[in-house]
Image 1: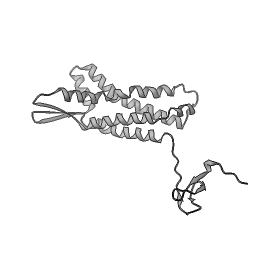
Image 2: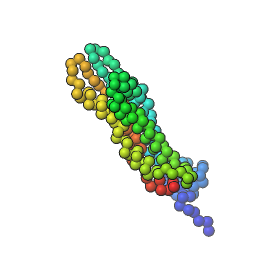
Image 3: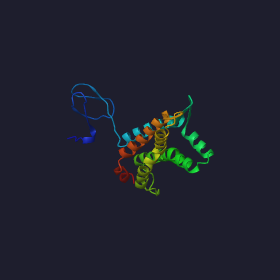
Image 4: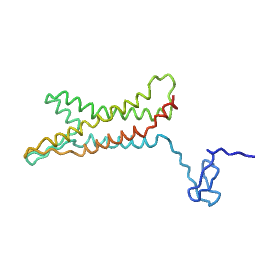
Length: 199
């Protein structure tokens, strides 16, 4: 008698009849409906959040982070333009903090999360000495620091109350906040139990 393993069975989404999975061209034996075989992976949700964060990171660097309205005219600057302007004015510590928090930290988090997601699907050879648990917890540690730029804009907008000067958040601040939000979701959606299985 032929025995069938449970992973060789697939159910029909229309009538819920159990069929033997032929891997392709599955037709339900009861109602004749075509059965599509969807293979989900444990990392797909984390990948979706990470890619969304990367997409939002593009306008976050192309559009103005902060718009200053003064005497009827508007001027805005991107993150890098703001860093350069602070540096030229001699505000080196603030320029470095914003540069690290707004440019290096998000990119580092993208790279580390992508490394974790790729390595758990395609384990590297055992000679690699990178501790994946430490990489994951480091991404959790540096995550909130990405919001420094958004906090600076919020604080300036709240403190400046001059009649001739008005500071408003630009489109980049919304995109940047969404970038941080989705990178946090990507990290939380990552199942750390997969690290053990990839060693």
